[in-house]
Each structure stands twice: as structure tokens, then as C-alpha cells.
Image 1: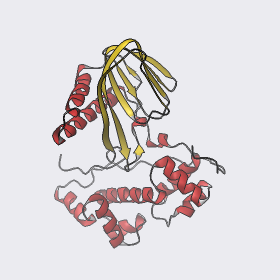
Image 2: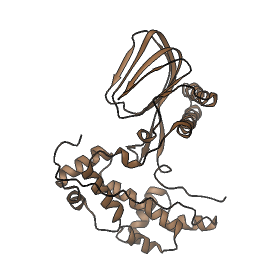
Image 3: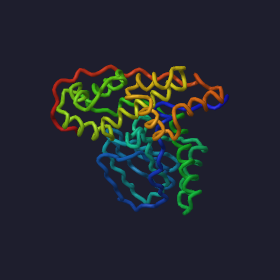
Image 4: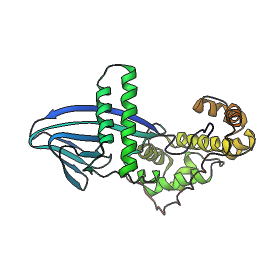
Length: 298
């Protein structure tokens, strides 16, 4: 296989190791979070840890894993005796802020994790405790490998749409995906959402994590990059079909995001003889039938 420039929801997301821990807590220790802010992987080494995550209630024994995905209310407490555990917290982010780790579908309790998985977790924790750039990068790599093994063995990965919570915002997202070449702006997107422009912009940012026009720009660039890789259209045609005013505007935006001009990007692909290896983008989900909604974004 030659060079393959990767795209799509999961390839364009980034993995962040947010914390590590190797601690012992006394009986009666408890922590409550509403909601769980990011994903965590916890390996119990001694004692018993009771975890409540949304509707799930489990007791984690030595050698078992608790996997806490974000979103639900969480209570964690030590039972009867000191509890020793190691683990890490992580985020998987799209466009810098859209949380993806909640889509992994991993159960809260892993009763018999493979030795390879627990070894990755322990190594991530050990390297993360060292104070050097190399150790920090290594810790993140081992944590990401552990997460990948969890997903491969236990995950039920959902579509990115599951992070949305309002049908009005879904309607605007669908309009963006179906009409990338259109003259879209906040008022037109707000009309699709049946909201006032100001309320729509606030809700969109609160629920998606970035302003609506920033999200639209990122989507246009991602789809345009796929078109450069998979078609022989000119950059002018690609710019027009993806909502850019002209080829120069497209080139400047593309270079800011990907570090090289569209023509150079395509030359690199042609040089490596890999044009056409990209997967086709998925079709957008159909819009939900949302009526008038001017209430809170939550």
C-alpha cells in the first residue's frame, strides 16, 4: 500500500490524555459528578469499588475494569476496605471540542480484561508519572492503544449523531451537509432550526462546541479535501461546489487548516499514486421533524 491520506469522523478526531492516577483511597471514600465530564478507565488492584453511572450499578473487584463514558451522572465509592486502583482519563474530540468518547459503547464493567489490555493501562500510568516530553507522548500512546483495544473487544461504536440532543440543531446540521455549496449563514440555518438567529447561535455552540459557521467551514474543507483525493475536478470547481467564494479563498482556507495548498495536496497524492483510496463520506441522517423550540438549550 502506498501513501493514504486519511479522512472522516474518527480519523479527524484527536485523542487527549487528560489525567492519570495510581492511588489508594480509604473505606467510605466517595466522588460524585453530574455529569461525568470525560471518559475514564479504572483498573482496581485491591479492594472493592462501587460505581453508579446513570442507570448502571456495578461493583468492581481486583483485576476488573470500570469504564466511565461521559454524560451520565456518576458516583464512585470505596467499600469496606482501602481500594487501590490505577487508570487514566481521556477525551476524543472532533473539531477541537465535540466529545466523541461517549459514542464508544463500552460497558461500565469489564470483568476479565486481557493481560495485554491491563499491561497497556499500567504502562500508560507509569510513563505518565515521569516528567519528560518523551514520557508524556509515550503515556498518551499507550493510553490510546488501551482505548483502541477496549473498543475492539467491547465497543459498540455509535454514529456521531448520538451526541446531538435537539432536533432543531439536527435540522440545521442536515441542511449544512446537504447543501455545502449553498449561500448559508446564521439566519438561514436558524430558519431551518425554527429559532431566532441569536438563540440558534447560542444553542448550536453550547451543544456542538463550536459556532455554526466554524463548523460549516470545517465540514466544507473536509469534504473538499476528499474531492481533491477522489476526483479529477479542478480546484475552482471544487471550491464552487463546496461553498467557497473562489479558488483563492478556498486555497487560503485549505492551507490554514491542512498546512499546504490544495494543488500541492493533490500533487502529493498523485506522486504516491494513491488517488481514489478514500472512503466515500456517509450520507447525512434525515432531518428530524422539529417544531418551534425557544426553550433552554439543555
